[in-house]
Length: 177
Image 1 (cartoon, one colour):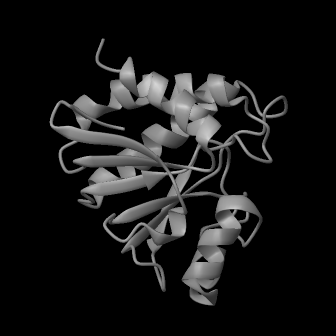
Image 2 (image 1 turned 180 degrees about the vertical axis):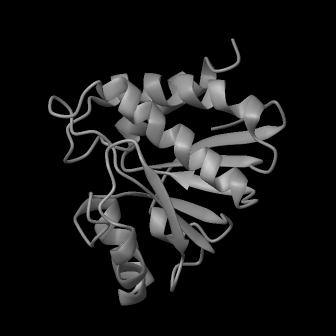
């Protein structure tokens, strides 16, 4: 599903975030050390090669809600924006920290004149954030942040499965209402 809001295309799809060839920056659902992990972090680090972890080392550790930017290395993307999402039930307030991930990533993208960015469903995997609640926070934050963006023109959510896609599409559908 695709929707245009304030001149920005927002879309949701099921896929592999490490192969988004038409996107300038992908977002890594990172760990605090910005190292290879499981899930999205593992997929991006494997595809990018060892240079990504090497570039990340001096930027770590980061705190929940923070975002940092690196090159894309062997990925088809020029940049990787690394966000540390909250661990549900441990890092609080979870909703504010998750919102900060999306807000900080979008602001970082805009500062670097990045026109397209792909996000995973941050914190919904091993960090345990309920998908329904995460989608609500995500789209509220996107709606609040869009008016501040000068360069970002395309936001893509690359999701793991059909169930997550359906939830994200429902929130995207409600976005401009």
